[in-house]
Image 1 (cartoon, rainbow, N blue to C red):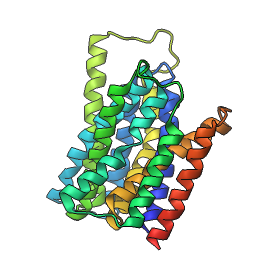
Image 2: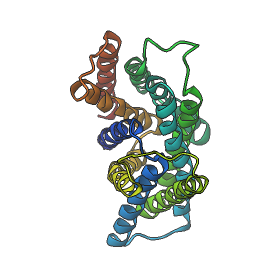
Image 3: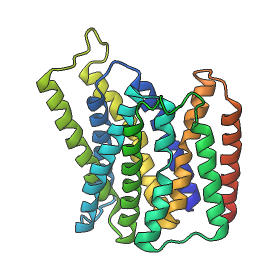
Image 4: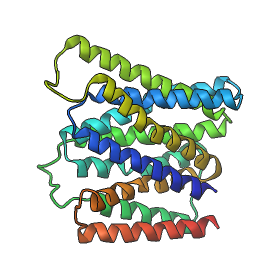
Length: 287
């Protein structure tokens, strides 16, 4: 089941990635958007916790840590897309699983057998091939810093998510604390920017209300992805789940091919094929 949950989470995060990338090209307030995204997650998580009568235990407070990591990761990724090369940021944000595998071994002694390790390497290579852009050079590294920060924080969020399953924290209360923390952080940032009034988008069709509501729509994909990935972590090896979820880039790639009409390079085609081979290998590992 871990593979199914991971693939479904990748689909949700892939859709989120499409919406993030599209909205990063619009004249809207990033903090208002992400505040709406996390607010929807908090609302959905609270509603689910009440419907299923979840227990509000101390362990659910791990969600605050997850919220801080997620806040930093999402803000860094969005900032990287806005000021740097999307391809470079995408490469870096596709590699948290490498960090996760190393720390999962150090923290919890999680080991990969030879077949699992080979499948993991195949998927990471596929991700790198898909995300690599030929116009990236040492002199063309705009957004690299933001991408690296996002990489580390996304990895920290994955490890925190796994931790919640090890201590049997209640799912929806944990997610509520996570999304509520993120909402507060982005709301504070939004208020600070508004107070300073340093950047105002003249004649923008994206009002704060419209941007917040759009962000809430994005939040549906985000909260569904988090629910699914935590179920994946609960049933599978941390590094493998993280690697499969990182394949959400394939969803973004299909969007650019069929909606934006971008052509696939040979490298992208090779990466797509390699990633699919990795998924099939994961299926063999899971069976």
